[in-house]
Length: 282
Length: 288
Image (cartoon, rainbow over all chains, first blue to last red; front, side):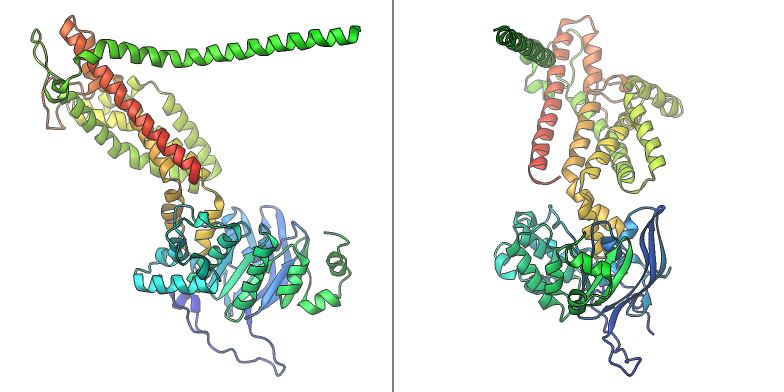
């Protein structure tokens, strides 16, 4: 298989590389996979945050990670684009494959991984020194794109995809921090989309937003999944039920149950999953 | 009722204590401001009359001749500050970035400790160090030596302020940039330092204001000069040095010039501090 991460060493080329069609390995139709996580364990110093997790993330679908605080949800999602490495003294065991390539192979630059796997954070964080427009294209700019025409096209496209264009098209020069909380979060989504990743990771993207702003983001997630693979962490059980196709329940660093959302919510196999979903703990 | 009267007494005594405490702090605050006010008042009374257009445009006159100015010292001071900036700003800023973004805990602890000790070193010590290292070796006082002494004083000052303002930049911005696939050094330069830029500039200005008034480190390095000097390898005039020389002289004319020089110097430093205030006010209002 062509090593896609290595095939794109020129940082000025941010265009998405065409994925080779994946032949179905078995007779039974299996949804194409974006991530294959195999026996993943992560330590922060002595503390084991993720314990032997094996999980496949389907392409062009929304996978929700649920579980009580401190169960390793955020750590898990961050290891999908190597963001957890920003914490010193982390150690990883097991493998994470993105389109079949090992993200943690020594030949791979974490920056390239993050360009392919974008991320939106819990707290919206538009850069305070930049305007709305600058915020959207900064990822392209700092990755070497100079063409103003290209930047302008991508600016509009990304803002439209994030359902923010109509609200801000006349105020692109205003500071990003002048927007409301929900708009700021959609601006952050536009910023992540502008570098054209293949995957969008969302770490509790709605937890700081009011219900109306939350509904907008949820709608957006639903629309984006036709083009992106989305993995989202959420504390909100109803949200997981509404937006996701697959749900993974984590508890104390372990993957307790993983499957189609309808099954997890209506007929969970594990007692712990049922207790958590019905609100008996967590 | 005993109980009630007791309470009333207590209440009364508490009010007195409260007033005493307020009065003490108020007097202390006055004592803090008083020296600045006194210095300014004194400088205005003694120096204002000698600050004229000539003061900024003419060379010092020989003893006995009235008039003249300190243009060579003013320009000399600016030259020395420029030389000091060339040494102090890059090393101080980059060192501060290292402390805030890269260094390990142990290295950082040591660097911080050393920087704090250096900040406490009396400025004349820097003069002696540069005298030994540069002036003796190259056999002569020079603007370079003076600039080096001032630059060395600036380094730990700028280092610590830069570190502090960079640490104030919320981690979310670093994460956001790194998650876009931006390289670490680009994140630091274009996101972190840009966000903290006003704070960094503030630190630089404060360091310049501090060394701009230094006399001791220049005594054995820049040495001073009564004339124009356009060769940085030669001794050069500086405002604080000129004030020092004139103030300890026995001549009334020179005393007046020294007062005027002091007024100009203090006003300059005051202006820098006002600029810093304006910058930091905007910073707290919008960004960090």
